[in-house]
Length: 469
Image 1 (spheres, rainbow, N blue to C red):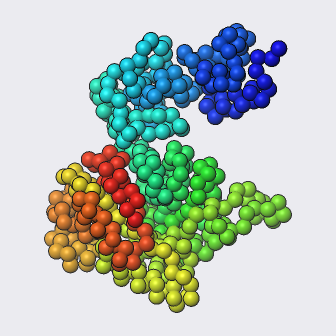
Image 2 (image 1 turned 30 degrees about the horizontal axis):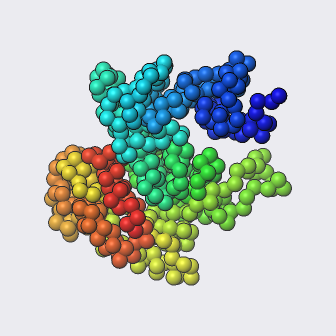
Image 3 (image 1 turned 90 degrees about the vertical axis):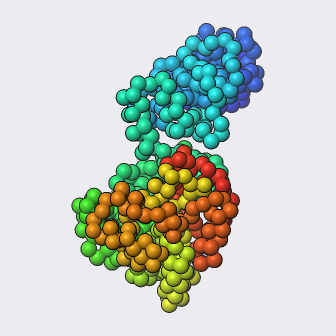
């Protein structure tokens, strides 16, 4: 006589497939197996014990991540921590054989292969899901490791955490309901790779990748990258285009930035049949291009163009769904909004939405201000910004930048007030009023760039502003 119906067996297999091959005693019982039947399945090799109450259904192969998931199943309510969390967060190369967890309450019987740490259980802001597994955040993991690791191992983890902390920011923003995550590109990250990692470790937010430097990335590469991200993450994925800077294009990539505005227009034009909701999906009857057929559906998010000068604004008005600015004051927003609207009207086209990346900090302290002012320092010699900071009374810092002062010297020369010129800084009510000021100037979307120096993952700032606009 069958111990469980074929339907229940298929249901168990589906559950195991979602859990890296794992099933729990509770799930087996729910499918109709008695404890005696479970024992017989173990004896017959249909089930393979991992920890108490956790089994592999099928072939007995389980990687480090699967063992961490099994540990969380075995210790109900526990969070992966310490060395195991460092491995799951890619702060160390090798996962430990014994899984580190922090249980919510004192555990009863010890479980072989699991080390339960008797320390304070992390609060909500100190936890995140990684591949569906509850895990301490990068910041909390480093704190926990500080008491158990040697200085060299801890230094290595801290260096990796500096670059991977962006994943925690994305996780916090997604949990708080922010509808879109922007993934910029710079000398550290390939933006499409980072967007894929973020999309696979968050739950709901749409993704925008860029601005991509058009003198470095060609249209086919941009379209392919966005399509890859949307397919691999299941998230609506947009791209932003920009001309970047001489330092980035010529200094980092060794490419010429000559004629950048022309390249921007050409790239936007070339992307139209390859990207966006209106771009045609690949069809079996399509003719190959140079012997290759398109296989992926185009990404369906918005096309954004980063602009500040008149030529780039005109290109955005003609081609973009949205134009984005970087580090601007409300007065600049008002001026640039008028230029964008006029350019769109001249083309008899609806004006694109207007967004701006703005450095943001709620209740900032000295470390936060240092970070904010550091983000401003690189703009002190840029045309348009230079005049704005001089008019705001920061001419001494502008002159110092013109003489070639380094970032540390410029941060020291800038007063705290400079952060409020092109950012959103202060107590919660002040910050919300500032957002309203930007909206009144014509800004449709604020892209929050949270200071994290004393606010891990920007949790305080992102929480205060969730749903504020």
